[in-house]
Image 1: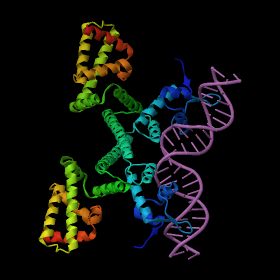
Image 2: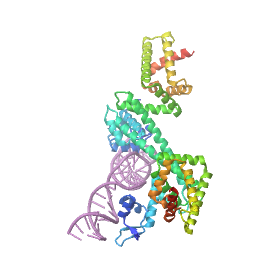
Image 3: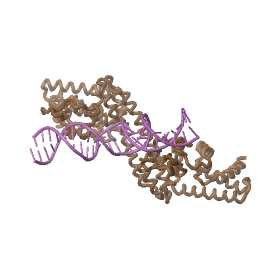
Length: 244
Length: 244
DNA sequence: TCAACTCTGACGCCGCGTTACTGTCG
DNA sequence: ACGACAGTAACGCGGCGTCAGAGTTG
């Protein structure tokens, strides 16, 4: 055990890092071997090995090499600041990734219910979610998701069909030129209120968010093209009468 | 609204991406403008804008540009595989980051209790945790953490002091040449069992893990230098007598 | 002499940011 | 003629992997 120094290859084998990495650490001044042979081969002493272990430990925690170098420069003060900073970054990254994951999961779920999925639908779904996240708080989205799950796929699909039927009927009345205040149209308004109530679950904040979305984005976008501006105008009149 | 095409700057303003990015997307063939002016200025049509929106949507989900290009190449089939793959990667990354976060948090906590923290201590703490994660399952670590929190800082510190005292007393007996089977030493063994029991919380699996750690790593490393091999041998004899 | 090591130097990755210099439009 | 645009070309980042070519060691 009187080995005083070792060359790169041996150190690489013992520690599991690559020779290239050791070269690189030398190059950037992170781990400069204490000695060289006469022809220039790197010789690492025990102290170097210790330092390498320290480097690997810090690297494992996700610090970048520059941070590690700075850490090891101060011999008697551990960088509590660096840790706090790193913690904050990690937290942020985790939150971001988690949100991404949830979104992707939701999208995957949505796409499973559909049969023919072209990219347009796919993108539309994404932009749809973007819009939703703009108007609903994460708690509200969570609540909506909860209700979705408790309701089940069939109910959801049924609700979608109901909506389509309702919109189709309104369109027919509009094209017939029926007065928005007529009892036929008012019945449809009544029906829409029921469907909306089913969606919001009676939560007035969610209803408010839904309202904001339609106001800001316009009905055409918010309804994914199901309601054009003309139809929206007609239906808005009918709703105004209803409120009055 | 008869604008048929726009130049880079305008598109950049409208979509919020940088001109450089648009150049880059052109360069790698991700978004090649449909037209150019006679002098070579890029002209983006409506279709290009749509494609850019799609690109941005997919990018938002964390796909790399090559994946996006592949996605947009298939017009009638959404890459469910890509989503699944991406989900898996994200999940893995989140798990990794979360573990890192927990580790860093624990380290920060440990360092707070100490007053003078040099890098050696810091690194030692890290390698300490590495060792622990090698021998304890995540559930066991969680359990230990739980008990730590319920006990509180003062109790923990008291336990550490107790251990130090105990070890010091054993060392004294060893140096005096006391028989390990003597009642004085046996009393210390008894006391150590109590302290271990306090640590393990009576969980035999945790006790087993602790045992494995001392066996595999050696007492000097497992105890962070508090117990050298000579002392460990002496104390082992005493424990053997006790079991018998 | 031959294989297995060592050295230095350079390019490649990903997604652009950032100059630097030249040309065009109004 | 001037300023705000447009173009291309190039380097830089981080942390190495991966050659290439030349020298050393046993």
